[in-house]
Image (tube, helix red, strand yellow):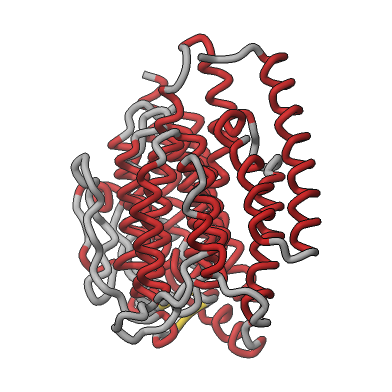
Length: 461
């Protein structure tokens, strides 16, 4: 049952006042080392989460702050041998409801148990919380409490390793996203706008899992390409929710490194074509292009000035040769232009109708067709970007424009509902990409303009 706004606001104020009082009592008992009294004051504070958590936003988590204070005290007391965590672990299990019990268990932890086993146990017991908002906040709290304790080793043993940490965070991400998506079906239909607003606030909690993945020490390109990205994209595509898909795709672009993006353009852009029809895919693609253009600009500034000058002179020479041989019209490039970064480019009609296998190296396909609806396929391993020759930070096996060109063309074909304004915006970004990364490849610009003219003609008819 949905409460009126005024009544809900009053309930929230009363709950926060109760939390404030209980926090003061808890701190007083902590100063006196009165452990049982600490539990007595913590339980009613946590019980408030049973009634008003649905009214709280991510910025109003006074309870989390109190539990963080309690967690710091318990850690200091345990390391200084004042109290063992066993003194609180067993009494904490007698909390009257599952929500307070889970918060206490996460805060206290399991003494002298392997981190891998703790993570498994936490994932299992959290399935008992089915309420979307309570489950979101509880899992977010678990995410924050485990942040500094995730495993980063590579040894396969009972103690766990980096793969276990990746699996733990990915599982938490998937479950939190499901809870956030399910929230849209809660309550009465007349409160739809209010629920949408809540979901836009709560989606930040889901995104923290992706931030955590990007911050894990030891994650390399192969792990990202084989495990992390496919799992994320599969969940994003399968959730079929506009709010979740738009937000999570943008978070992926923001939090992971440019090097990772350069080596995973095909699966990311292929997944973009499978998103809900109401998702603004134009913004997603443009955001990725803009980030990579900025990356190329930074790398160009940091390169050796002498090497940069030679590359610019070579590019200018290739451009002049091509213009003289072709009379200013695109055609087959000269042999000198067949250096890296200047591969021969097919005509516009050929590039759209016939996939080109030469655009990638070592199986890095750049003309992937749009996959059928369903889970995103796993991707093949890639070589480390650090072992490849680069130009402006772009590995030599990544034909940046060709990848975006083929994927954007497939995207436009797969999404006939795209407006001419969105298509034009995509072409502008592609042109900026070409001029920034391949200033001597004017045929790339011609290709974009030719396709743009064709689409405008179709639109006018």
